[in-house]
Length: 463
Image (cartoon, rainbow, N blue to C red):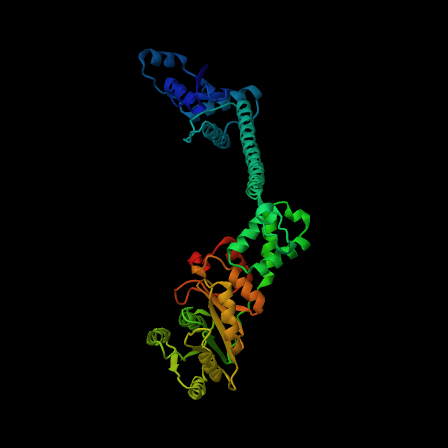
C-alpha cells in the first residue's frame, strides 16, 4: 500500500483530484485544512489517500487511462480483519457496518464544510485515523456554531446601539428645529412653553384644538410632568397621549336583547345621519354574534332621495321601515314595531339656528318612551361651529355624540375640545362611506392615535 498526497481549494476538490488519479476506491487516510480562505487568496486543503496496487496505478497514469482497483471494499475489510486477528490472536472489533456508516457521515461532514453536498466517497480508514478525524470534525462544527452565535449576538448589540444613537440624533434635530421656540412660542397670560414641548404643542394646535383647552393641558403638564420624562420627545408624547385619553369620554356598547331601545339621530344637514343609521341597523341585525330585531322610523319627509336611500337599505337588510309626519303617528309606529329590540329613528337635517324645527323635534321626543338622543357631528367642522351646533341641539337633552367623516378630517382637535367641554360621551365613529363596515365603537385609544399619529381605518387594514 502506498500513500499519495493531493491538494485543492476545497476538501471536495482535493478528493476529486485523488479519485481522478486512483479511482473512486482510493483509501482516504487523512484530510486537513492547510490555509483558510481569505479575501485575497483561496483556501488550501490536503488529502492523503492509500493505494494498494501501485504498479497498476503507475501503468494507468502512463497510459492516461485510470482503472479502478479490482478488489471490492468488502474484500479489503476482510483482509484488514484477518491481519488484525493474526496479530492479537483474539477476536476484536473491526470495521463493521457501524464504522462504514461513521466514515460515510465523516466524509459527508467534510463535504458540507467545503460547501459541497454530495454522496460520500467510498473509503476505509483505520480506527485511530477515524477517531482523530471525527474529533476534528466535531470541533470544527462546534466552533462554527459558536462563531455564528457570537456573530448573531454582536449583530443584536450593534442594532440596539444604532437605534439608541438614531434616537439621540432625532432628538437633537428636533431641538435644533425648535431652538428659536423661546421667541416664537406663546407667551399670553405668562405661560411659557419650553422648547422640549414644542413638537407636541404644534401637533395639538394644528389639529384644531381650542387654544384655551390646549393652554390648560400645557399648564397642567408643566406642573405635573417629572423632569426625567422631558429628556426626549418619545416620553413627552407618551405623557400627552395619557392626558388626551383622560380628556374625552367614550360609551361602551351594551346590546341587551329583551330591553327595547329607541335611538334617535339628530344633527345639522350634510353630516351623514342617514348613512350612519343604516350602518347601525346593519350592525345590530347582521354584524353581531346574536342577531337583533331592528326597525326603522324616518321623520325625514323633506328629502325624497334620503327616504329612497333608507328604504333601499331596509329592503336589503330585510328590516321594517315606517314613515311618520305627525308626532301623534310616531307613538303608533313605535307600538307597531314593539317586537323589535332596537328602533332607529332618522330625522331631517336642518340648521342649528332653525329654532322652529328643533321645537318640532321636541314634540316627537316628549312621550312615555325613553329615547336615546344621539347628536351626529362631522369631524371636519371647526370647534366654534361644533359648539354652536351642540348648544342649539342641546335643548333636546343629548345623551351621546356620534362623529362622522373622520376619514375626511385633517385633525381631531375640535372633537377633543367639544367632548372635553360638553362632558358628553362619544358612542360611534364613522370612518368611511361603506355600509356597514365603516362604523366603529368609539374608544379613547383610537381617537388619541388618530390625533397624534394621523387617521387610520382599522377596518380596511384588517381586510
